[in-house]
Every structure is written in C-alpha cells, then in structure tokens.
Amino acid sequence: MNLWKGLCIVPKNYLTIALPKGKLLTDSVALLTEAGLDCRSVENDSRKLLFDLPGSEARIIICRPTDIPTYVEQGAADIGFVGKDTVIEQNKDVAELVDLKFGYCRFVVAMPEESLPQKLPGGLYDLSVLNHKRAATKFPRVAQLFFNEHGMQVTPIKLHGNIELAPRVGLAEMIVDIVSTGKTLKENNLAEVAQILEATSRMIANRVSYRVKYERIQGLAEKMRVLVQQYD
Image (cartoon, rainbow, N blue to C red; front, side, top):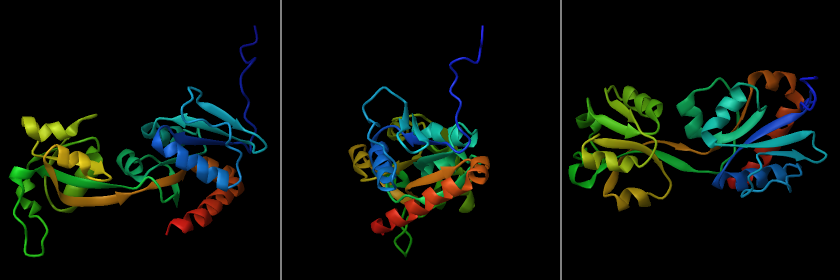
C-alpha cells in the first residue's frame, strides 16, 4: 500500500494564507481581492476550511484567530492576517509586515464604577492604588507588560470569557480587555481607567517562507501597503 498516495504536494512557490474566522474574514478577503487574488470561492458561513484560489498559485486556510500565529510560526501557512492584540499576547517568532488598518480595538484597564481610583491633576486615574492587585484577563502577557512598565506588581488571572464578572464576585479588582465601543463595560457597570494600546489587524509571515518566497510575499505586502493607505 502506498502511504503517500493522495497527499497534497504543494509547489515550492505556492502561498498558503491563513485568515481568521468571523467578522475579520470579510475585510481580509476584500483586501486580498483588491490585491488581485481571486477569492470568490471563499465563503464566511461555509464549513469548508481550505480554498484554492484559481490562477493564483495560492490557497486560503480559515483558522481561529488565536491559532493563526501558530500556523504561521510552524510553517503550515506562509502568511496570515491577525490582530495585533494576538501578535503581542502570543509573542510567536513571526515577521510582522503590514498594518492592515482594519479590525480596530483598544486594550484597556477597567474597574467597577463604585471603586474607581482618584484622578490626578492631569485628569488621569491614579493607578498606583492597583499595585499588588489582581487583573482578570484573556491577555495575561499584555497585562503583565503594561503594569511592569509602570513599575507595578499585578497578578493576571487568565480567563477565557465573561471576564466582566470577575470584579463583581471578588475574583479580581480589575479587568484588562479589548474594547471597540465600550458598550459591554457600561452594561456591566465597569469604567475604563487606563488605555494600554490600540490594535489593528496585521499581515504576518513565517520567517523561513519570507526568505524562500521573498518576491511573492514582499510583492503582496507592498500591494497591501498601497491599498491600506486609503484608510489613513
């Protein structure tokens, strides 16, 4: 029996592009289409996860956003589109090539409205009272980096969802999370006390692929840069 029969052999110059499931997929496909790739077969609501792109020597794989840096780092994908928040949190060994300008969100520190710190003369909250406290978050590395930069010791408590509940039940004094409109914070009687950073989607590349397929990847990256300038 031939164990290799039926395996997909990918040509050397073929590009595998990892895109995120969900709301960022539509923007990602639209940008690749503008760059000249035929993405008509890619469907957001399909159960199919791999799409060959006609006439492009490329294919798209659909992944959970948090898995994309792993696919790219390990070489299962040559490039990927993923949020800067995920890039920072996972700290994978990938090359960050282009700010794609969509998928905007903000990292913030938020607390219950009834226990907000006092404000300093400049209008910012006095975060020093948060030293040696706990922060519930999906992004413990981001939280740790922020408080370390401010010379504070804060214990991140990693949760996978519904982190707004943590301050209400005594699990943590604050949360660190990404927000777009702030509506969820308000609904849970939480208020933003500090902004950590702003994040948008990025084009990342496997470092070996970037060298071996430099002309293809860099050419696509340059097209992305030109296209996203319209968002500035």
